[in-house]
Amino acid sequence: MEFSHKSVLLNECIEYLDIKDGGVYADGTLGGAGHSLEICQRFGKCGKLIGIDRDIEAIQKAQHVLKDFSGNVIFENNNFNNIKEIAKKHNLEEIGFDGILVDLGVSSYQLDNAERGFSYMNDAPLDMRMNSSDSFSAFDVVNDYKLEGLSDIITKYGEERWAKRIARFIVEARQKKPIETTFELVSIIKAAVPKAAREGGPHPAKRTFQAIRIEVNNELSELEDAIENMVQVLKPGGRLCIISFHSLEDRIVKNTFKNLESPCTCPISLPICVCNKEPLVKIISRKPILPSDLEVNENPRARSAKLRVVEKI
Image 1: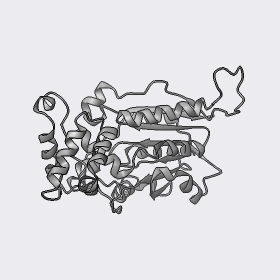
Image 2 (image 1 turned 120 degrees about the vertical axis):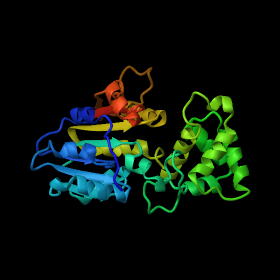
Image 3 (image 1 turned 90 degrees about the vertical axis):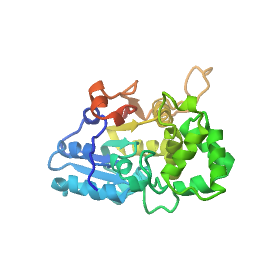
């Protein structure tokens, strides 16, 4: 499937990665390979890129986009959470990376490919798997989770004020027949959210679909560990750039970066540090880097993007 792909915060990412001639980089979420292409065009003949994505279709697309750099790129159908194992596999554990980029958003391909079931704007089987070989899907969450479990994830991952009501409507609907498609779920959500709450705001299914997608792909539970792992495989002076798209992700990234920069756990009352925990990174972007108005106008999907950057000490 061909799709229109616009890399979010592209110029900002390239600037903050500070790409070096002959450097070693990783793109933890290849997607349409827009960021990776810019990296490859800048790191010279001896540069190396590890391109990682859970979605085999994204890997296949990226192989085409990056065909002119085939000798410089290694593709990994994997999860960026496993960066330490990936580095070891390719003998980069000791060398380290000059930069790592992770875009935590759903790729344009996944959103635009209706069959993947990510979008509430297209009718498709309930799926939402970033890795199509996984057996667990949105169908399982919607049809198998108990009322309390559904309500909890819609509240926690969707920050949806009508979570309990939406969960109850889902449970009641599936007692008649399994909920099989995105539009069936959208219809149930619309019925659950009061009309007044549906007017003037985002699509009523947006937060619930986000919550289910996060649950299906286990997107947040390992993010803090993944960030720490990525920092460990950076060279001193290497940079980690992370783009997030909602407050839950951004909060984890922000707090993890802070903890890595100021890891001391000593009580404030102590005059000196005795835990001997040394800072691992320096935060480059104290405030999140946001897309320009021009970018948002050209690519509305960039509207909620936030980029944060750290440099390994």
